[in-house]
Length: 112
Length: 319
Image 1 (cartoon, chains in turn brown, green):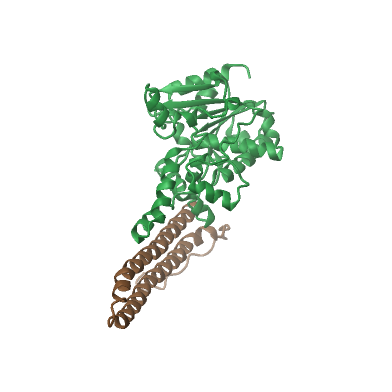
Image 2 (tube, chains in turn green, cyan):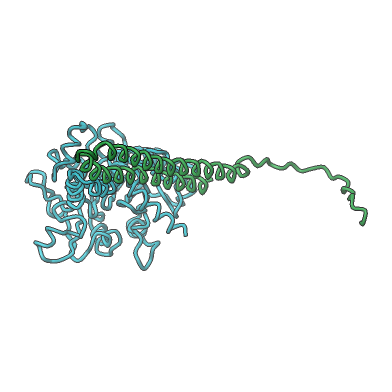
């Protein structure tokens, strides 16, 4: 039980690290790309097409990192479910009562 | 494997233990007394079972940041601890605290106060004396726990006549304050990469941040905390030592050179901080209750014959 709790903790910690790490790198990428775009957007004639490219770039980057976060959450939930399943039989194992002596089962195997 | 896993968890708790506790993560360490690597339940039957000959004199040892009670083990004999020696030589019953060192010192101190209350209540024989020994951050927990006990009038405080601090940063740790200032500087630069470095640096736990100023107060406003975050030295610092207890301090010093020792102390805690050399002359401790041991770094203070000899010598004095 304690081991499963720790495995779940490790899973959650890795999930948190991926979630926050992806968000931090996304922010850096968007801010870094913003600088050349801002410069190019000040050039007459280029401003409009550059703005469009800038918006497309930001949407693509945001979606890519959102996909990373979604997969991370899905994998996390799947692992939690698997760990719960591993833990389940240990928690709910019924105590076996002594059974009455009974006739041995006859085998349906015609070769015996 | 068990000890290595415990050690790895202790490091993890020290680094991000506040996050682990806040998110209910199963890797967060719950504060408890540990004996033989397992948590000791604080019930009378459990204590009677675990302690064949409970002494009326108890010694409680509290480890430092990112470690467990195993830090007190001597390198050549890991099962030989200060507590074990005090039991053998002076008849104390030792108790070792394990806790999440990434949580704030204020929270941990309050929990320690509660844990000591439960220990004294469940102890199989009447307690005559409760001696507290804190190593590094553990010393700050001891001070905070005593403060909580005084405020909440917890009865165990009446059993505490003497407290011992080994390598405790009473006046804070300058390395943490410097790290805090560098992090603030990086954050102020308008560059996404330096801000990212600052964010990673700011992931360090509240417990480590508290070490910067030996933060023991609980009533600070958010504004005061923000002001403290900008300052290299907190304005309200330090909190006085509790007057009803005899405090004894052991500080380590890497060298015999006074100037180097003053700057670097035991490599982590400077002498001024570990030896409580405040600017206020009326707060100074008597010279016979402060011992500076030369040639010892911070880690060595947790398991060293000279440190033990000094502890024993002080404990043999009549309280």
